[in-house]
Amino acid sequence: MSSQGKKSAWERTSVQNLLRNRQSGHYYGRFTIAGKQKWYGLETDVLSVAKLRLADKAAEVEKLRGMVVSVEAGKATMRDLIEAFRARTQANTDIKPATVTAQLGAVKRLVKTWPGIEGLEPRQITTPAVFEWATRFKLEGTKFRPPGAKAPRRGNSATSVNSAIDALRAILDLAVERGQIHVNPVAVRRFSSGRLKKKVTKKALVLPSRNQVEALFTAMEDNGSIGGGGVEAADFCRFLMMSGARLGEVPVSSWACVSWDRNLFHLPGYKSETSARFIPLFPELGALLKKIQERRRSAARFHPDKRDFLAPTDTIFRIKECQKTIDAASKRAGTPRITHHDFRHLFATTCIESGVDVPTVAGWLGHNDGGVLAMKTYGHLRPAHSQSAAQKVRFASTPAAG
Image (cartoon, rainbow, N blue to C red; front, side):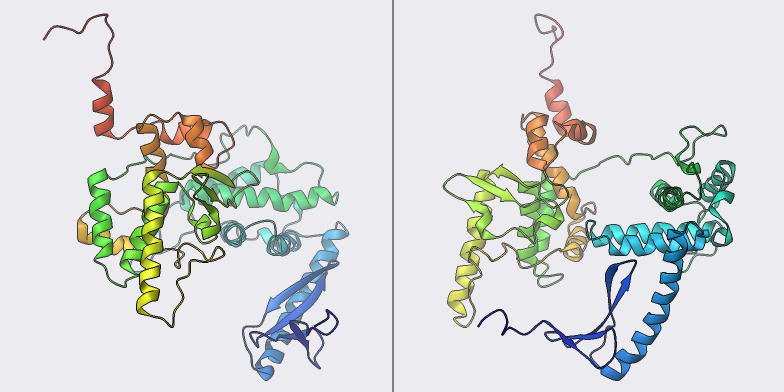
């Protein structure tokens, strides 16, 4: 069929700005804001409901357009700038959805902890005012009260505070761009009253022993179907530990990534341009992949109506995460709770303990700094290895007499 004969994925309706996705049947609103097209999912496949939701969305868009015009004209209030920043963040396709959510959350904390900021003009946001707000935020937090708690939580984490400060800086950058202010008060290098951002206290990295890890895997395999299948979940975590992959890299790792003849595995990175990398097909990693292949073939033999999912384009794992299985297994095995990312830490620590130099491990992890971050993160060793290594240290030419 020619390209002209192909149907578009989108079906126009009699209502302006309202389109229907042919595949899902759901309706979407399409608007143009500041010269850029913006789509809004209306989360319904019912036309009458879509019309009502489109009307609400259209009112929001008109309000947003007015704010964008004010920003462009250099007459924006902080409310206008905040909304423009939100719109710019949501329209940014170069950042991950999780980052968008985090930035919008930071703006929400800013507005909640600085009452009245939306009614101010950018010139009223002075350096002393910023410092006063940041100090209050560090001490009082957002006053969020967790369910069941008798009193609001006091203070916020360094990440929460610092991300809100970064959001304020980005918002005021918009005012600088349009000439409303000449200097961003958050960009001042030194505050006479002290430190603006909250000091980050690095959490000690405590990893389970090898025996605890094996006990965890055994318990996971006994978990049955909780969280995506016990055996599949255990192998998923083994893969993380044996490859050093980030959690988001596993769902995009297919059988085409395995190069048996070159003894390499290609990890399709996503965090940066240099995070895509080749790692050695370590003996245990290769054995794990072959075990998964055999399990798939065996399942297909017993169920002829199902394929084995071993085509080059098929993903190696059919689950994307298994934290519930990990948590349930940790309780059953009596091991410390760990996350998916901790298996990446286990990979790096095991490699370093095995004698691999830090720059090489950093390359396997997808770092491009020559090992600086890896040295900061994994400069420690587990106590058992540390004590064993200490016995090899000699400060004299001959061993000390017992």
